[in-house]
Length: 141
Image 1 (cartoon, rainbow, N blue to C red):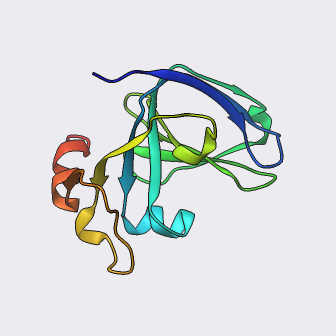
Image 2 (cartoon, rainbow, N blue to C red):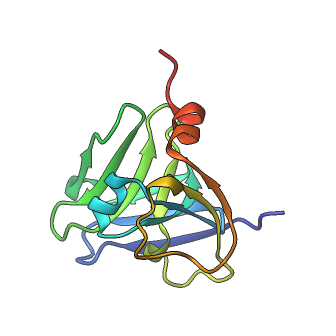
């Protein structure tokens, strides 16, 4: 059973602060081209549901990155703050954003068929290919 926790932190410059009331300790990894381009490597994220409090939203910028999701970042320092599902309002926040969380583990790797051959993770986890991700999460036409 998952032991949900809460956490709060801020972007690098401190302009945007986020408090997440329900953080799942199971890290998801995304190897898609967009995530790797956005962050310079795979995105490691924590699912945080919809119970998010944002202070400093005047410095928050949103990038509409796909039909089903958008990405938030600080306009001052560029810190990646979240990935949000449009249909549900659920947030995924970079695992490194909350530096004091303990007991985290990688549970799922998305777009595993797009993972470049210059890195891999030693632990075993579930994986989904791009086709499996699109079949599961794409909005109905």
